Figure 1: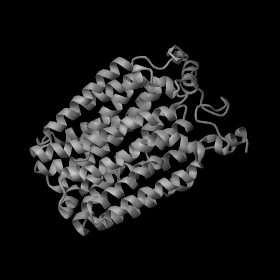
Figure 2 (figure 1 turned 90 degrees about the horizontal axis):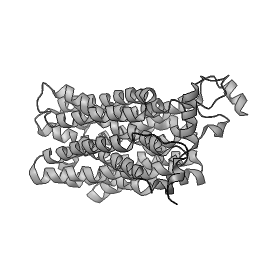
Figure 3 (figure 1 turned 135 degrees about the vertical axis):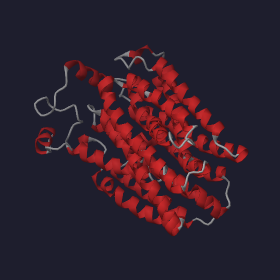
Figure 4 (figure 1 turned 90 degrees about the vertical axis):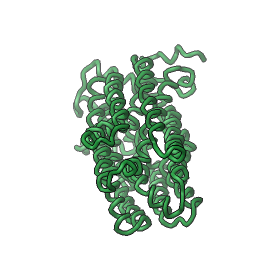
Length: 431
């Protein structure tokens, strides 16, 4: 099928179906296997007589496994059949998740976490961002924003569901039940996944013939072409201060978000909230995160990445500091909403500011490196939160540090993201 025929015969752009499927993928891989795992902290610590630091290391191992492979994800998709790679990733995530329920020792829990992390490389956020960058040259902010809302809706659904299943049947049955649901949710991606639009005779959204697609203003189109066709190579990016600023921002935002959320269920019940009330607040956080990703994904297309970054992270800073006072039940709901917005910063902004600063020419390889920093945050933060609690009986010190990291991100972004990538600027980098 030629591209022209492909455009005429496919009245609904195939990328929209792909977007829905990766939304479901994100809901399971991130919303369930990462964000909802905190529901199992207390029951598994009691069953295996673990400290919170020991349990937190399971989440860290997921991130370590992702960090170890994320820089090579782009190369893997270039050398092997992307559809097969994604299917193997999906199966690995499900098998690792269900493996938790069969674990009889701490090393077995850790082994399952490593399998989940390995599968996440090829069926998680990194792949989602790379694929959507291939499929959407226009409305990229909306597409990425919508896809990442899957983690929020997944968290909102799976956290209370996990809590109810644990109370009713124990943590092992809860894990197995959720594993079956996860596999069902990932079936659309299993069958619909296509790495590039060219694979089925299409072009990316925004690159269509003007007679067959929504036209953009001339200035917007020129900016779009510059961001997609120009940009730094990975080697050139390493030599620029703004690349490292992007990396530090990704690390700081992910540290704050995951460092808190991986312990949020225990934190709320420690403060005296009932498990039901805690689950409600966690669902509020998750839904707020999902809504924020949709809104700020749209806003990114309207006001640009730099201004969007400033607005979103500023609100996030407020939410982080209010979380320190969430024991005030009168403000608990508002705090949950604002922290949900703070949580939205991580996965939404990291890919957008990478393209904004570096251009789109070598995006897959560059974002693979940024992802190292993105996942390094949770590796250290979850452990740090657990260590602080085990030492002081409170998370306050850790959470205050995470709030400060959000302030640092805001400052770095204000300095280094003010000017977007300009065509040819990479030629000024010393070779």
